[in-house]
Amino acid sequence: MTNADWTRVNELFHQALELPRDERGAFLAQACGGDEPLRLELTSLLDAHDEANDFIEQPATRPADLAEAGVSADLVGRMIGHYRIVRVLGVGGMGIVFLADDTRLGRPVALKALAARFTKDPQRRERLRREARAAAALAHPGIATVYALEEFDDHVYIAGEFVPGETLRDELGRGPLPASRVIDTAVALARALEAAHDRGVVHRDLKPENVIRTPAGDVKILDFGLARMRDLPQPGAEITAEGALLGTPAYMSPEQIRGDAVDFRTDLFALGIMLYELATGAHPFVGSNAASTIARILEIQPPHITDRVPAMLSTAVGLGDLDRIIARCLEKHPDARYQSTHDLVTALEFAEAGGAPKARDLAEAAAKRPLRRRALGWWQFHQAAASVGYLAMLLPLWLARSWTPGVPDAVLFLVGLAAALIATTLRLHLWFAVRELPEESGAQRVQAGRWIRLADVVFVIVLAVSSAFAFQGHVEMAVLFLTAAVGVLIAFAIVEPATARAAFGRPAPLDRLGAP
Image (spheres, rainbow, N blue to C red):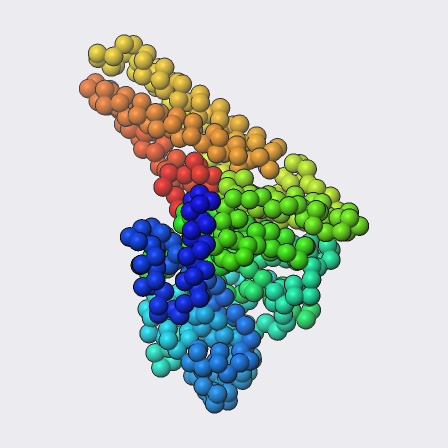
């Protein structure tokens, strides 16, 4: 959208926000004058605003809040299944969180449920189930544990770890944090996200309200209600209309706002916003309302954190490094951010130690992660095997150069030779880049990926055509060419995307063919 478009959205959004919810639809239909994309944009923005803090928007201290959520005053002390309700922890736009006693296991739990008006809504019920599946797949001290998904009297509940403490939003209410505490918090959050992203789970709604600091000083991520799961069963995963805004507007990435496909780098953008707030006490893109904040996320680059803190603090240990890390997390285009959460964790660990990492340091740090090292080894093996296979097939292609009636001698061989040399050279280049230039490996894979894919496709075509001609009198060679063609096709369409995803957390955009 242009600035003029966002100005109009901003004005209409503000006007609609002042109306009761049941009157907004008629107002938007009239105000948009038949402009359906504008009406859908405003509807999504209003929905996102209304549900910005789904479950723990505020402590449940006002009777009106409890009444709106459908919570009766005499609920305390009652049993829901085998859970005894102790008190209401919080109420949000979509549901309620209770503190309850698990009478079977004798432990306190946070019991999450939909607000009364949503208990029959199949989409919101599925969203609650999906949150349970996403969080239950994770085991990390920085992520609140899910114990069970329960259904009592046709109501769905998530029973999870009760995390005492205060949210980062509460902590921010007292002002920015000391530099050392910001960096400690950043490392802890990045490690928790690393665990989630390794399991294929993207949070998509990371914000200060969804992070609690315990009395011991640890941080835990809560609320995976908008999580996207890559490798987990998720029937009915598409539970939101196309183009709808998912998440809290002030913490959305540009691609999330535009309704584009998102991956783990969306969480890195939200983390960058949170760390900026913790360091400066101010949101980097804050506007007068949600619409103007979204416009600023899409259009502006915020000042450096070292420009927004007192000069004596800007020289604090690691703050300059943290500034560069945050700036990279807040890049508008996902490809300009960290290309794996592991790289972010490594950079933050070096900032915590008081020095920016060098390429070799990053490589050594990555090598200390056994699972990542093993996955990287498989990716490197694939590159080597593909290169050897391409070069090995050049000899049969040379022998078959005269078996192509109507085609000048050696034309297919020369085309195959060019494809093999391009693919082999670039694969070996990427091997070197990943080993010696880990910070640039994502960009290098994007840059080389297009040419490798083109060479792969051309080589498959050359092998298939050679097989067709060879069947006329050289059946053994025809079978060899056909087998090689199928092998190359499977390697670049299925095997390579999987090894790249395992090694780097997500393949570069051109590292995959139809990979999620």
